[in-house]
Image (cartoon, rainbow, N blue to C red; front, side, top):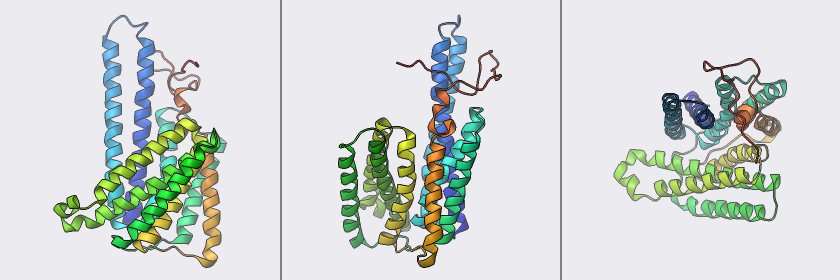
Length: 316
């Protein structure tokens, strides 16, 4: 297992988690500033809050962009089968960073979920031992793989229209995961072609296909969030991305994972991953409920307002 690949993938996951926390914090402070305007006599405080929101959002956007660059670097030096499963640690980093920023101490169930996801990921990757494979795929493989992925996504999206609530969110989350895995595979192809020069890359179809699949994956993800809760969509999203990436790594880049007797610990690892993901999706620091739940008692900001849980919003 390439140590540099692991480090880069973990950096990408942590940067993405930090971006999510900062941008959510900017959103909660935006609501806080709106509620304070009715009681504040001067515009000075409003400007301060606005400046803080802009700083948080800008920092989050910068980290999000940096996460994509680091992920590309990880895919350039390592296998798709290793990088994408490691990105599941974003949930762990989100929990850790979000709990500090929003002053939320995780409960016992959340810690057990944290442990299950971490152990499951380590067990799966340790038993699977993904090989490196090729840096680029053979041209003839993209068409059948692309058609298979497209048919799968269309089938999942079509099935989601027949159900409502949690099942629909899970199906759309899985469709999004498949598209994110395909986007990562295309990104790996792009990084593998970089040595040929920017001119060659600009004339190739893969950079444009990467952008299109990324946008479709993001749209499906937003549809999953609208269809149901994070608890319903996150397990399908996390496991779907990891397992689809393993399949695409094998089909496109000749990557392999260990089979035979090692499939037993691999299966246990996947089950632990599923349990940990489902448990962490309930945690306020991961699900984003920090801005709708009351803050812990006894924590007040310098203006006398209670801090830590964001702003309680009115139900409509």
